[in-house]
Structures are given as C-alpha cells and as structure tokens.
Length: 451
Image 1 (cartoon, helix red, strand yellow):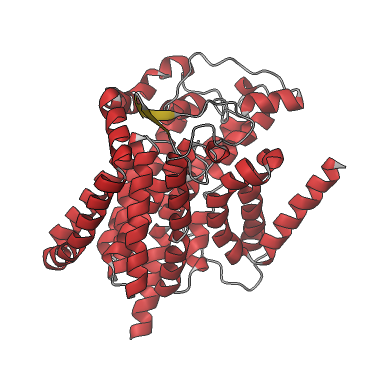
Image 2 (cartoon, rainbow, N blue to C red; image 1 turned 90 degrees about the horizontal axis):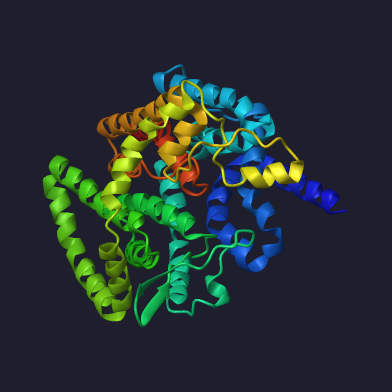
C-alpha cells in the first residue's frame, strides 16, 4: 500500500510540474526554502521523500520543455565552447557512473544527480523570463522569503538548545551544534533548512541576488524591504556560527562595489553615500540589540585557527589524491553520504573501499571522477566564471550587468566550497550560470523594445 501511495504521489507531482514548466521552475526555489521545515516539523516521517520533492518537480518541467514542448519557444542550445565543455564533462561523469569500483551502477545514479541533474536549468531560463521586469519581480518576490526565515533564525538563536524549533531533519542522528563561551552558549541556527550547511549556502546565494537589487532604483517600500532583508540575512549569517557565509558576504560586498566604483565612480559613490544612514542604523542595532550574536561569532572565529589551512588544502589537497586514483576514479557517488544506505536497502555489492576520507569537495570530486574528470569539471567551472565576466562587460542595462557581476563574483568566492554535494547551493549555482545566456537575451529584448 505504501508503495502504491508513493507511486501515485510521484506521478501527481511530475504531472503537475509537466503541465506548467515555468511555474514548476519558479516553485523549485520556494521548495528549496521550505523543504527543510517540512522535513523537520510538518512531515518528519516523510523526510526522505520530501528531500527529493524538488527533483520530481524539475523532472516534470524537463520532460515538458525538452521532449514535449510542442510549439512553445525553446531556447536553442548553440554550438559554443561552454555548451561543448558542459557536454564533455557530463559525458565523463556518466562514464564514471558505471565505474566497477562502485559495485553497482545504481550507486552511480546518486552521483549523477549531484553532478548533472540541475545543469538543464542553464538552457531553460532564457525561455523562463520574457523581460527584465519579469526577472526583477521574480527575484524580489523570492527574496521576500528572507524576512520570515530571518526572523525564525533569531528566534532559534535565543531559544533553548532542547527546543523543537532547533532540531535537525530526522534520519541523521547529529548532535545539535552550538557556539559561544562559558555561561552564554547558543545554538547554531538552521532557519527553515535541514542542517547548518544547507542554510549557509542559501545565505551566500541570496547575498549575490540582493546586491544588484540594492544597487538599482526600486519603489520606496521595496527598497525598505530590501534593506530589512540585508539586515536579517547578515544577522543570520553570524548566528549560523559558520565562517563561510560571513567571509563570502564581506568579499562579495567589497569586490562588487569596488568594481562598480572603478567603472562608474560618480554614481557608485553617490549611492554608497545614500546607503550610509542604513549601515549606521543597522550596525548600531546589531551592536546594541544583538551583542551576544557578535560576541559568540567572534569567539568562534578567533578560537579556530585552521581557516588558512583549510583554504590551502582545498586548493592543493586534491592533487595529492592522484596517488590513489591513477587516471580513473572510484565512480560518481562513491563519497556521497547516502551511498551506504542505498546499498543496504537494495542489497547492492559493497564496492571498493575508499583509501582515505576527504571532507573538502574538490578532494571528493578528485576521488570520484579521477584526474581527467577533475580537470574537465573544474575547467568547466573556470570557463563559466570567465563567461560570466565577459557577459558583464558586454551588457548595457545596469541591473542585468550587476546580476552578471554578482554571479561571477560568488562563483569565484565559493569556488572551493561545496557545490556538487550541496543540494541547495547547486541549484542556485546553475541558475547563476544560466545568466550567460539569459542576460544577453534580455538585454537584446529590452534594447529592441526601446527602438
């Protein structure tokens, strides 16, 4: 009976997303934010099923757009360097999914989902938005979710560690993480997300979307809401106790407005002068009303001296793993945390034991798809950064240009962080990458309308 109910539910979700692929894609960004809340508080008994909900929605949208689109406009996949590199890197990942070291190709499917499943978004978004205004309205509406999520984060921080509001998603018996100092220990918040890691990826991605909105001229109340969102997301970044979102936000702000100041010094400096009152008020409010947050984060930042070592290992460490992989690898999904559970459920062959445990994503990628795949995968990621920068340089409309710049910078800043194994940030990553095709198209459309 459970199997029948499950199949009916899966079919229904895929069918509904198939009916309207545009709404389905936009709904995925809502599901990203609320699926953790559903898993933790609403339907914990269906936690694993909810985890795959957004994938089922995307599956229906993919089927409609790429196979059964009919007379709907489909953005052509052109024969250019980026697309060729995507296809080559994807081909190698598919090849590694059948790696005999996995014990079973079924295990490789988990890896393929992590590497490839969200790539089709790159070619869909040019058909998703018909104008710059539509893109802007989607982004500002999506970012409104930061307000309830941010308020929830504040409540979590000041709630007891044992409170149900601070629990993680079921199925992974992890101790609730805390930070602070003697006599003042607080929980590291997760917002509506399942775990801290998922939330910090969301914070970084939203910062990259907020900065272009901050820099553009918006209606008065939308500008106020944007300021509130920036304040809440900054405060929540500290409350996670994670250094990554805070450092990423600082680097993003400095580089974003620094580059804008070099290209447009007069307008940027004028805008920053108008921003100064908000920074003053928000900073004062944070120091007065949320002093425990700043102190707890500062204690964590100064007590851990491994940041430089982690960055260095993230860049250099993967090359040391070639001694274990030769020219091959252990297969896509070999280091995925759900691999062992899948083997146990389906009674699959154990596969070859990994020679070493690696936490850094670049090292895990090197182990899974080998040095050839590593070069192809990170060569693709470098190429996407270059393509976003070139897109930024050639765009005419300020808002679109700022989006390209912000997407380029966040991909540089989080280059060694998790993307393949981060089910939240990975969707944003490929959405940002789609700007290579989306933004020039919208730039052309708006230019044509003005003529």
